[in-house]
Image (cartoon, rainbow, N blue to C red; front, top):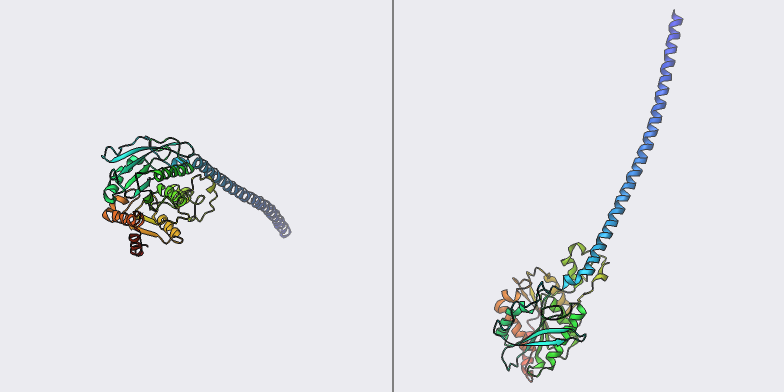
Length: 361
């Protein structure tokens, strides 16, 4: 009996051993398959992540490229906004101003409309060549011009850029520069104004126009006034289109600026202007960051010592002249007195030069 019991135990032990080996073998095979499966899943996951990254990059490129194409195609609509209607809301006649309708032809053959508004029939005071902002037309600026005549006793020449108001054509940087030159050439040839007292005044986009025509005509322009003007359209791109500021920019941009080539109207202003310049900056400008005016002043003053910078704490993009009140008009009036002198008034000029040295920022 004892031998049989031992034999039974031995057989049981062999059965358990065989079962253990079989279980361990299958466990090893299972773990091996599981490990292989997990490795493959991790590889698939990495592949999916790569595909997502590639697709995201592709969508980004397509998105930026699409926006760039749209910006290229419609940038003139962003830079120049003549309005849905090109008719004038009011004319100088509505305000009982003494004016003349003037039609010009630019050097490339575009017909341009403008107004010469006089302080008096025989006025020999300064003549301000006014260049407006990008939106609307010269009719929208008549109230400001009316006050300018009252405060400064000057004449004002208001030009409608091509594509604006009653002028023909379509706006572009090159075209508007030709328009500005045509306006200045016309004024310089008139016999009923003092052509030695022409002052260029530009606001926003008009400042860019004015800076170019002033630089190109040192013998025809006595001085330049800039109000709430941008440094360049490239610098403004990040303001107008914040989602593109990494790809388009001017001197202030830290991005790669790979899309700068799409901008047809860079309007890099100031450059080298030798005439006296007055900078009028509204510190609450919601369209052009006031920093742009500071940069323009710094760039100009580095070469031109006849620069004056004046800030208006409550001035916004379009109403600095209004909220600035008497301080605004006295600032402009003093600048005109100093730099738009009557012929032969050299002693007055020298006196004002010494007085103005304390005005520069």
